[in-house]
Length: 455
Image (cartoon, rainbow, N blue to C red; front, side, top):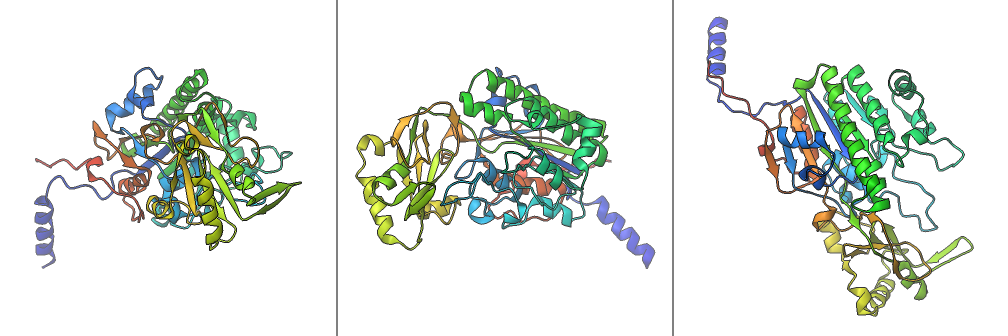
């Protein structure tokens, strides 16, 4: 009987339907974020990005990726790693709202994330994980982790907290000894493209030495250059060329590790960028209305706008204070038409729909070219320059990019538009792990299929 069962099973295997998607498309997935990545960096030939252009030819690329609101770094990176929008994952801004004045604290710790991460799902499936410079990664369930973290004490050398919170203990020093040489704040500063080079050497070392199944890596100098110069300028061009080289370093490390055939590389970003010419300080209006007073380091307030990038989110000291909220609506309505035309009010229902901070009573979303300032004094409308992000993600320049190539990825596929929340389910499917992305969509057309066995 056992012999007959074996024959039946063999017959079933030989007649199994062709072109089925494999349960596990890749043994290794590397997710690289380029902070401030824009689709034109790989769609247009005048940018020095040969690695990104090669990925376009060899795999999938998107014309644009819709971000979150506000379209800033920490909420965006958390959406990439969770498949959830800020409303659900809990990382609403880069920095939390601090009514008595910003201390410089950011959302650094992974325990602030309210939904499961890809790192956790991969670890629970018995896979090896790694991360280098990823936002909101302090204390993450990651086997080899160099978190993005710095001290509020200016007397503490910037790399010290990263050394302290690296996993396992001594990993930072191990990388210095074997891959990068001694690192300090200057060598990892976003002021210089060399920071991305050093970051890529850190990630490359981990790939070659430990061969993680999932690795996340954050490249950040492009964002710094775009803030200073806008969408184009000599430092922007230098930074994106450096970022492209950093991606190539990762590609070479994958090949040197002998895992190229089983690895998928995903390159994405967190937001696009817009040139700005004007800044609005809505807290000035609240100060003039007697709702916000800051004197001698003391804050007295009924309402404040928490600015995040280009946008501003209204916080009420008493969330049920309808009288103050009505007063603020009246203040906004009484503004000159020349000011009101520079932004729109995003009401709570729309904030819920786009998945923004549930604590905000409303938000102000400026037109492209306009940015919000948190200042409570001075002119409410004034000149500005450079570039920024944080806008409501409903126009092209604020969209980021997406590319993927390697194991399990179709070749020559162009996606018109996807969301940041759609990256996590794609990565999970490639790794063959169970993962619930609360807001993400898995697009089967991005996955390679198993070729029919004609023998």
